[in-house]
Length: 252
Ligand code: PGA
Image (cartoon, rainbow, N blue to C red; front, side):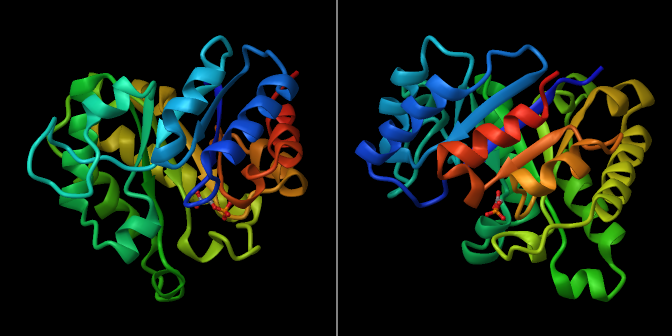
């Protein structure tokens, strides 16, 4: 059985004080349950403070991005060593906002996942098609490329680490959640692809989570699908109530 994974992507929201308030509220309100792994990804400036608050809780802290090198002349970038030092255990890689607005290519995503793996950070490998690609009937082609290129060169042991987040770009921040059927179809496709690239065992163990306007109202239908193992949540993770409500949908 795959354990549910729920992540809160705070994006470019929250000062340190605001992030601490949210982290404390989550710590107080989240159920202590073995059936779900909970992760939050605050902005870089609040990482250490949030990690300290959550240190004696089951909630893990993730970065929203990283540079692959350990150090060097890379103005404005943050290295895996710095993230570990700040208390991070996981990192979002290849979020569509980074691919679209900051020019992240599949090749860069691959290097960043490699950097996670060599430093013991769990990669949260994000993939997803745009509306234009969906309407052009290219969903499988796009996802196949993103998954194959992102995992290029990794052994089955490496590819098994972390989670894959399927986030259709047209659903992110739009209030237009994918229907459970649409999401399930794509998750099943990604799982079959993993079986083709690696093997059935890896495919059946790998957690594939959904992201894109996921709310407490839409969570149940999505999480009931056989190939949906949790969610990556943006807007609904910025307040404790909705995020805790989504986590509770995974429990029991
Ligand atoms: P959203 O964001 O829930 O606000 O759509 C999800 C994400 O971008 O990870």
